Image (cartoon, rainbow, N blue to C red; front, side, top):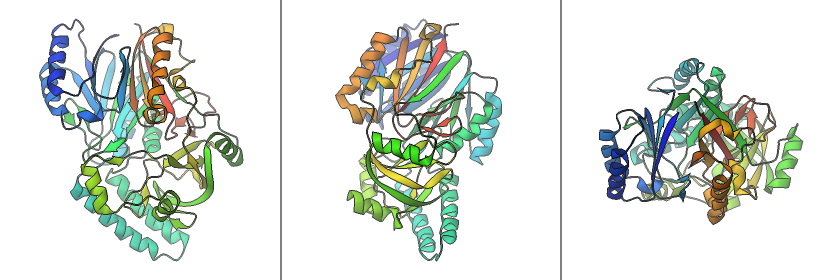
Length: 444
């Protein structure tokens, strides 16, 4: 395994091209895959860099936007990273048609590999015109929902609305993706791209310099190890035990009942969820204001408040961030069917130690030549300047080269015995914040 890291802490495309030209002209490595990672400030300016790299990189490439990246030179929220590898890998990609049937076929192909990385837009922000269609559908289903006289009728309407959201791939349920890919029987890390500040066409992901839009890329590797973690206490062995753990660790607001179906929440405590968010958090936005803010890149993908739901299967927890959107229903990038219909409203509290995100005691670092971490990007908001202690820990402790990619809510299928609170299905981990994973490339 060979690698080369080229980091450029600048969002000036001309400066980036000049640096890339110098670095690539002196490259001694013969890579067979490249990861191109831009910070959000590059969005709209990245095309000239991509055109340059398309002429120079005559091998497989994957490009996407992450909220920040880290190398031994520091943590950068402005700039771009080019990671070149000589690795044993294969790339799979979905296309049009039934998404989960395609993922099942990919899972079959993954069985000969050691671990894999899935990269995809868990939430996709389309054009203004497409959003008008989404608003129309929302009103159409809400009118039918509001005319229901019982819960069975409401859930039937919700199911149809959820099916439409998933079929259009406006939101791709992370746990459904992992559940299907998990049939391969290998560990899989999932980068579920949700921009902290959204614009139309985000998240933007490219394979060989062509946008994949609302599809899923899976990169399968041989000669790698993988591990996943969250920074929270272990889960309980019952609904009440886990609820008690949540109340002792998080800023607990109130216990609520929810009406949900598929990947959609309709009501909280008998109130339409949009009205609940307005009343409790004093947040409201209409369609025209939403579209104007979206085009200016002012729509936030994170919220300080969340609805914590507890899994019927494991008593683990996942948290739905509660933010104001101009929809009557609240679709989410998670299949909610395996959660109880009671939840807890919480405020976000992280570990006191940012370095916890890169402490992986299960991996013997001496066995690896290179490490790639993916760390929850909400750490950048939670810790701000203190996030640098994460970098300092990695510099002092990890005696191998590494890169850190900051992206929202890393999740995984990882076949280990664990009592992590983020285990929401057997061997499937997704919390909504406070998670990270690492790929260790063997020194072969």
